[in-house]
Image 1: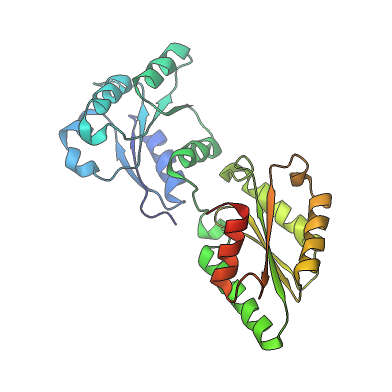
Image 2 (image 1 turned 120 degrees about the vertical axis):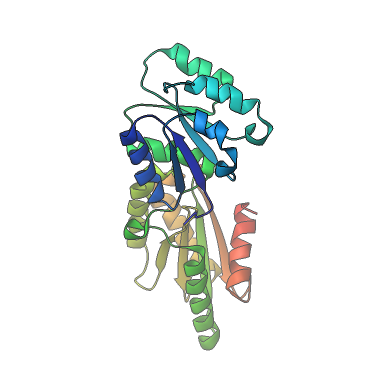
Length: 263
Protein backbone atom coordinates (compact mmCIF):
# COMPACT_ATOMS: atom_id res chain seq x y z
CA UNK A 1 0.00 0.00 0.00
CA UNK A 2 1.00 3.62 -0.43
CA UNK A 3 2.08 4.07 3.20
CA UNK A 4 4.10 7.17 2.35
CA UNK A 5 1.07 9.25 1.31
CA UNK A 6 -0.16 11.79 3.84
CA UNK A 7 -3.32 13.88 3.54
CA UNK A 8 -4.67 16.64 5.80
CA UNK A 9 -8.42 17.28 5.78
CA UNK A 10 -9.71 20.55 7.27
CA UNK A 11 -13.49 20.60 7.73
CA UNK A 12 -15.64 21.64 10.67
CA UNK A 13 -17.92 18.64 10.11
CA UNK A 14 -16.74 15.60 12.04
CA UNK A 15 -18.89 13.44 9.76
CA UNK A 16 -17.12 14.69 6.62
CA UNK A 17 -13.69 14.25 8.21
CA UNK A 18 -14.59 10.72 9.28
CA UNK A 19 -15.80 9.86 5.77
CA UNK A 20 -12.58 11.12 4.19
CA UNK A 21 -10.43 9.39 6.79
CA UNK A 22 -12.16 6.01 6.59
CA UNK A 23 -12.20 6.02 2.81
CA UNK A 24 -8.57 6.96 2.25
CA UNK A 25 -7.08 4.93 5.09
CA UNK A 26 -8.46 1.78 3.49
CA UNK A 27 -6.08 2.55 0.63
CA UNK A 28 -3.02 3.01 2.80
CA UNK A 29 -3.16 6.82 2.96
CA UNK A 30 -2.42 8.49 6.30
CA UNK A 31 -5.11 11.06 7.09
CA UNK A 32 -4.76 13.91 9.60
CA UNK A 33 -7.82 15.90 10.71
CA UNK A 34 -8.41 19.53 11.68
CA UNK A 35 -11.68 21.35 12.33
CA UNK A 36 -10.30 24.83 11.54
CA UNK A 37 -7.58 26.45 9.45
CA UNK A 38 -5.98 28.47 12.25
CA UNK A 39 -4.40 25.39 13.83
CA UNK A 40 -2.70 24.58 10.55
CA UNK A 41 -0.79 27.86 10.63
CA UNK A 42 -0.27 27.89 14.40
CA UNK A 43 1.42 24.47 14.53
CA UNK A 44 3.05 24.07 11.08
CA UNK A 45 5.68 21.56 12.28
CA UNK A 46 2.91 19.03 12.85
CA UNK A 47 2.10 18.90 9.16
CA UNK A 48 5.44 18.25 7.51
CA UNK A 49 5.51 15.86 4.58
CA UNK A 50 1.95 16.44 3.41
CA UNK A 51 1.10 15.23 -0.10
CA UNK A 52 -2.36 16.76 -0.27
CA UNK A 53 -4.68 19.14 1.59
CA UNK A 54 -8.46 18.71 1.42
CA UNK A 55 -9.95 22.02 2.55
CA UNK A 56 -13.54 23.08 3.14
CA UNK A 57 -14.52 26.50 1.80
CA UNK A 58 -16.84 27.31 4.71
CA UNK A 59 -15.00 27.15 8.04
CA UNK A 60 -15.37 28.85 11.44
CA UNK A 61 -12.91 31.71 11.76
CA UNK A 62 -10.64 31.83 8.71
CA UNK A 63 -12.56 30.58 5.69
CA UNK A 64 -11.11 28.06 3.27
CA UNK A 65 -10.32 30.46 0.43
CA UNK A 66 -8.50 32.87 2.75
CA UNK A 67 -6.54 29.92 4.14
CA UNK A 68 -5.72 28.78 0.61
CA UNK A 69 -4.44 32.23 -0.35
CA UNK A 70 -2.23 32.30 2.74
CA UNK A 71 -0.92 28.80 2.00
CA UNK A 72 0.11 29.81 -1.50
CA UNK A 73 2.09 32.74 -0.05
CA UNK A 74 3.94 30.47 2.39
CA UNK A 75 7.14 29.02 0.97
CA UNK A 76 6.86 25.65 2.70
CA UNK A 77 3.33 25.07 1.39
CA UNK A 78 3.43 26.95 -1.89
CA UNK A 79 3.32 23.82 -4.04
CA UNK A 80 1.06 21.73 -1.80
CA UNK A 81 -1.89 20.45 -3.90
CA UNK A 82 -5.25 21.53 -2.48
CA UNK A 83 -8.69 20.09 -3.18
CA UNK A 84 -11.55 22.27 -2.00
CA UNK A 85 -14.75 20.92 -0.46
CA UNK A 86 -17.88 22.95 -1.05
CA UNK A 87 -21.51 22.57 -0.14
CA UNK A 88 -22.41 25.70 -2.04
CA UNK A 89 -23.94 25.70 -5.48
CA UNK A 90 -22.50 29.07 -6.53
CA UNK A 91 -20.00 28.76 -9.34
CA UNK A 92 -18.31 31.94 -8.09
CA UNK A 93 -16.99 30.15 -4.99
CA UNK A 94 -15.42 27.41 -7.06
CA UNK A 95 -13.94 29.95 -9.47
CA UNK A 96 -12.41 31.90 -6.58
CA UNK A 97 -10.91 28.74 -5.13
CA UNK A 98 -9.38 27.68 -8.44
CA UNK A 99 -8.02 31.17 -9.04
CA UNK A 100 -6.48 31.10 -5.56
CA UNK A 101 -4.55 27.95 -6.44
CA UNK A 102 -6.77 24.93 -5.76
CA UNK A 103 -6.15 22.06 -8.17
CA UNK A 104 -9.66 20.60 -7.92
CA UNK A 105 -12.90 20.71 -5.95
CA UNK A 106 -15.54 18.28 -4.68
CA UNK A 107 -19.14 19.17 -3.94
CA UNK A 108 -20.67 17.87 -0.71
CA UNK A 109 -22.19 15.40 -0.20
CA UNK A 110 -19.83 13.29 -2.29
CA UNK A 111 -19.62 9.63 -3.23
CA UNK A 112 -16.62 7.68 -2.01
CA UNK A 113 -15.77 6.79 -5.59
CA UNK A 114 -15.59 10.48 -6.51
CA UNK A 115 -13.31 11.24 -3.57
CA UNK A 116 -11.00 8.34 -4.45
CA UNK A 117 -10.84 9.36 -8.09
CA UNK A 118 -9.97 12.98 -7.33
CA UNK A 119 -7.35 12.03 -4.74
CA UNK A 120 -5.85 9.42 -7.04
CA UNK A 121 -5.51 12.06 -9.74
CA UNK A 122 -3.06 13.87 -7.46
CA UNK A 123 -1.39 11.14 -5.39
CA UNK A 124 -1.16 8.58 -8.18
CA UNK A 125 -2.74 5.16 -8.28
CA UNK A 126 -4.12 3.90 -4.99
CA UNK A 127 -3.94 0.21 -4.18
CA UNK A 128 -7.22 -1.47 -3.16
CA UNK A 129 -7.38 -2.80 0.42
CA UNK A 130 -6.32 -6.43 1.00
CA UNK A 131 -9.87 -7.65 1.46
CA UNK A 132 -10.74 -6.33 -1.99
CA UNK A 133 -7.35 -6.60 -3.69
CA UNK A 134 -8.13 -7.37 -7.30
CA UNK A 135 -4.68 -6.56 -8.65
CA UNK A 136 -1.38 -8.44 -8.49
CA UNK A 137 1.70 -6.77 -7.02
CA UNK A 138 4.88 -6.40 -9.02
CA UNK A 139 6.64 -8.86 -6.72
CA UNK A 140 3.93 -11.49 -7.24
CA UNK A 141 4.01 -11.09 -11.01
CA UNK A 142 7.79 -11.29 -11.13
CA UNK A 143 7.73 -14.42 -8.98
CA UNK A 144 5.16 -16.05 -11.27
CA UNK A 145 7.19 -15.23 -14.39
CA UNK A 146 10.33 -16.52 -12.65
CA UNK A 147 8.58 -19.81 -11.95
CA UNK A 148 7.49 -20.16 -15.57
CA UNK A 149 10.97 -19.31 -16.87
CA UNK A 150 12.46 -21.98 -14.61
CA UNK A 151 9.98 -24.52 -15.96
CA UNK A 152 10.80 -23.52 -19.54
CA UNK A 153 14.52 -23.88 -18.86
CA UNK A 154 14.09 -27.33 -17.34
CA UNK A 155 11.99 -28.55 -20.23
CA UNK A 156 13.89 -26.64 -22.92
CA UNK A 157 10.57 -25.18 -24.09
CA UNK A 158 9.55 -21.68 -25.19
CA UNK A 159 7.57 -19.21 -23.09
CA UNK A 160 5.90 -16.00 -24.19
CA UNK A 161 4.53 -12.97 -22.37
CA UNK A 162 1.97 -10.49 -23.65
CA UNK A 163 1.33 -7.14 -22.01
CA UNK A 164 -1.75 -5.06 -22.77
CA UNK A 165 -1.24 -1.42 -21.88
CA UNK A 166 -4.64 0.14 -21.33
CA UNK A 167 -5.70 3.78 -21.79
CA UNK A 168 -5.58 5.96 -18.68
CA UNK A 169 -9.35 6.39 -18.69
CA UNK A 170 -9.85 2.65 -18.27
CA UNK A 171 -7.19 2.34 -15.55
CA UNK A 172 -9.09 4.58 -13.15
CA UNK A 173 -9.78 3.15 -9.73
CA UNK A 174 -13.52 3.61 -10.25
CA UNK A 175 -13.36 1.20 -13.22
CA UNK A 176 -11.46 -1.58 -11.47
CA UNK A 177 -14.39 -3.99 -11.69
CA UNK A 178 -14.50 -3.49 -15.46
CA UNK A 179 -10.84 -4.43 -15.62
CA UNK A 180 -11.49 -7.59 -13.64
CA UNK A 181 -14.28 -8.48 -16.09
CA UNK A 182 -11.88 -7.83 -18.97
CA UNK A 183 -9.31 -10.11 -17.35
CA UNK A 184 -11.93 -12.86 -17.13
CA UNK A 185 -12.94 -12.29 -20.75
CA UNK A 186 -9.34 -12.67 -21.89
CA UNK A 187 -8.91 -15.82 -19.81
CA UNK A 188 -11.84 -17.28 -21.74
CA UNK A 189 -9.96 -16.75 -25.01
CA UNK A 190 -6.90 -18.66 -23.82
CA UNK A 191 -5.86 -22.21 -22.98
CA UNK A 192 -6.20 -23.61 -19.47
CA UNK A 193 -2.42 -23.45 -19.00
CA UNK A 194 -2.34 -19.72 -19.83
CA UNK A 195 -2.76 -17.04 -17.16
CA UNK A 196 -3.94 -13.43 -17.14
CA UNK A 197 -2.91 -10.99 -14.40
CA UNK A 198 -3.98 -7.44 -13.59
CA UNK A 199 -0.91 -5.51 -12.51
CA UNK A 200 -0.69 -2.85 -9.83
CA UNK A 201 -0.49 -0.29 -12.66
CA UNK A 202 -3.78 -1.78 -13.95
CA UNK A 203 -2.40 -3.17 -17.15
CA UNK A 204 -2.80 -6.81 -18.17
CA UNK A 205 -0.01 -9.40 -18.29
CA UNK A 206 -0.59 -12.72 -20.06
CA UNK A 207 1.71 -15.71 -19.54
CA UNK A 208 1.76 -18.27 -22.36
CA UNK A 209 3.73 -21.44 -21.48
CA UNK A 210 4.95 -23.71 -24.31
CA UNK A 211 4.46 -20.84 -26.75
CA UNK A 212 7.02 -19.43 -29.18
CA UNK A 213 6.89 -16.17 -31.19
CA UNK A 214 4.49 -17.47 -33.85
CA UNK A 215 2.04 -18.88 -31.34
CA UNK A 216 2.20 -15.70 -29.25
CA UNK A 217 1.57 -13.57 -32.35
CA UNK A 218 -1.48 -15.69 -33.21
CA UNK A 219 -2.80 -15.33 -29.66
CA UNK A 220 -2.22 -11.58 -29.77
CA UNK A 221 -4.16 -11.32 -33.02
CA UNK A 222 -7.05 -13.32 -31.55
CA UNK A 223 -7.16 -10.97 -28.57
CA UNK A 224 -7.11 -7.91 -30.84
CA UNK A 225 -10.02 -9.14 -32.94
CA UNK A 226 -12.19 -10.43 -30.10
CA UNK A 227 -11.93 -7.67 -27.48
CA UNK A 228 -13.47 -4.22 -27.82
CA UNK A 229 -10.56 -2.40 -26.17
CA UNK A 230 -8.57 -2.52 -29.41
CA UNK A 231 -11.32 -1.05 -31.60
CA UNK A 232 -10.28 2.56 -31.01
CA UNK A 233 -6.56 1.65 -31.00
CA UNK A 234 -6.01 3.20 -27.57
CA UNK A 235 -4.79 -0.06 -26.04
CA UNK A 236 -1.33 -1.32 -27.00
CA UNK A 237 -0.07 -4.91 -26.98
CA UNK A 238 3.59 -5.91 -26.57
CA UNK A 239 5.17 -9.37 -26.76
CA UNK A 240 8.33 -10.98 -25.39
CA UNK A 241 9.50 -14.59 -25.78
CA UNK A 242 11.96 -16.74 -23.83
CA UNK A 243 14.78 -17.24 -24.65
CA UNK A 244 14.94 -14.84 -27.62
CA UNK A 245 14.01 -11.68 -25.69
CA UNK A 246 15.45 -12.53 -22.29
CA UNK A 247 17.04 -15.30 -20.25
CA UNK A 248 15.23 -14.57 -16.98
CA UNK A 249 12.12 -12.88 -15.64
CA UNK A 250 13.72 -9.46 -15.22
CA UNK A 251 14.99 -9.35 -18.81
CA UNK A 252 11.64 -10.50 -20.20
CA UNK A 253 9.62 -7.97 -18.21
CA UNK A 254 12.07 -5.21 -19.11
CA UNK A 255 11.77 -6.17 -22.78
CA UNK A 256 7.99 -5.85 -22.53
CA UNK A 257 8.28 -2.39 -21.03
CA UNK A 258 10.65 -1.25 -23.77
CA UNK A 259 8.40 -2.59 -26.51
CA UNK A 260 5.34 -0.97 -24.98
CA UNK A 261 7.16 2.33 -24.46
CA UNK A 262 6.62 2.43 -20.70
CA UNK A 263 10.33 2.93 -19.89
